[in-house]
Amino acid sequence: MKTWLKIAVSVWLTGIIIAGIAFPMVKSPTTWYEFPFIPGLEEKARNIIFHVPISWSTVVAFIMSTIYGILYLKKKDIDYDLRSVSSASLGLLLCVLATVTGAIWAKFNWGSFWNWDPRQTSIFILLLIYGAYFVLRSAVEEEERRATLSSVYSIIAGVTVPFFIFVMPRIMSGLHPGSLGDEQGKGPVLEFKMATNMLMVFFGALIGFTVLYFWMYSLKVRQMRVERQLQQITDTQ
Amino acid sequence: MEFFENNQLYVVLVVILSIWFGFLGYLFKLDLKIKKLEEQLKK
Image (cartoon, rainbow over all chains, first blue to last red; front, side):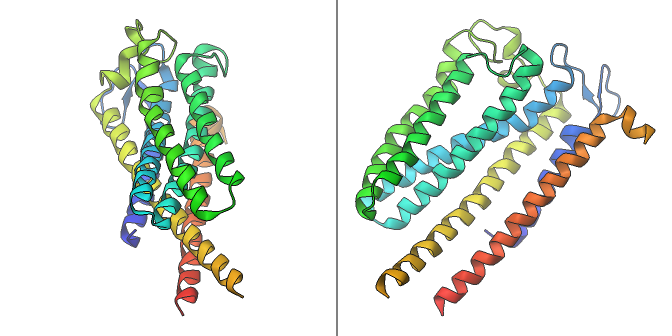
């Protein structure tokens, strides 16, 4: 990734953090930097700006892992396996962050950190699925066999991602915004009822977190390539 | 001090920005370290 893009995303996300946290929430906004007060959500609405983009980056990471899994099986190039595992590891990290930010929000909105809401249950299952991916990888020593097995697994795991993130929480009734039968909860994310300035910060965060993911991903891939090369040198000595 | 007592959101902002800058510093440093290793391996 180009240096200017790294600096740009750093500055961009710093601005998003400042806007997301420090812009005041008032009942009748009069200036561009005032967010409208959302009844029922109040100051807790700020979580949307961070929690949703992190969840989105999780989906991007898991889908990327699946794509590289397919490419590995097709071309048998070990570099694709390195890309696939790098993306899956970042996806797992982001998934944990999405779970934590969601649980903190749930504590203040629903009364407890964990409620086994369909959305929380689905993200918990995803954590288990991708946790098992790394258990599988650590159980196989031979490089090619490990790459083949984990590529097949990442494809199966990747198929479940859209279902657990986009489908299951919407076809079942629950507490999370967007759940079945929750007319009010459809609110800020699904129907984009957010005010224009809040919406701009939200989409800015979506773009920023996605670019940040790609930066972290490129670092992880490069680190794994170096690690592999060093391992090969050690093995030949 | 009275300003921060009445505007706790700014305290949160300062804490989060500190973590964020620390994370960014780590990423840039990691980037440089990997670059050095890549160059050494090329040689």
